[in-house]
Length: 287
Image (cartoon, rainbow, N blue to C red; front, side, top):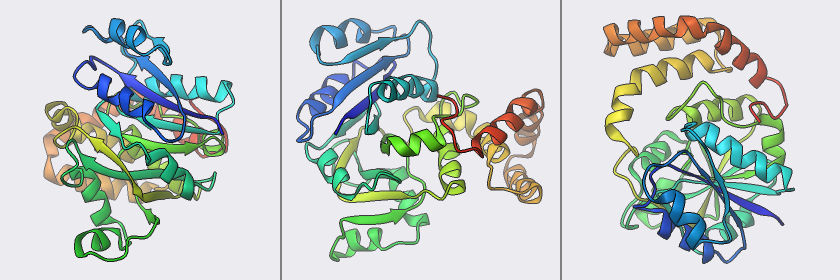
């Protein structure tokens, strides 16, 4: 069983030592692959000098989260990976997390651990919001002391920690290059739905995500309308009428901003149409 952990770094000194130390402590051996997006802090010197086991793939410019992960995924696929674990630079795995995810992994569907906050005192805010939208009993079991099952089928969860079987990657591919930072995991989930794949949560696995809500709250808020508009435009599950309805819902809350963002998509129309066509095929697109 060959498992590669892909970590995309950008100015990661605040978190990277603990992140990589946690991987060292994993009860299941994994190969750490670090793709550095042209950090300007000490990351580029620190990681290769302190963690000799890391496959170090430094980039000359910031490619964004999705494209950085695609580089790591390609490396893993070229080296006969069975699974690829995507892990944020600000996320820390519990030692048994990979072991627990392997127990429920079926080689077809995406697996996630429970996402906790940085000190493990509560659920990560966005992960909890995802569970609230899902039709399963996981949140109830956690809150009210029920018997927690090993596996729950959920909906969309943050890509801070995704355990991805290689067969799924060969059919669905990597992250869409239209998304630089944020929105790439939303787009990927729509493709999972289209190709009849599920997101499974291994309830006994844990990852600690050291953030408040989003990694960069100000940047996310600035880009939120753009991301929602673009995710909708690229969603291969929607008909034209469904897409228009969702755009209207976005526009009601921020009409001026939405109009600006919608017009900004016009020059990208060919790319959007191409991406929808490519993502409907069963092939490792974007890889």
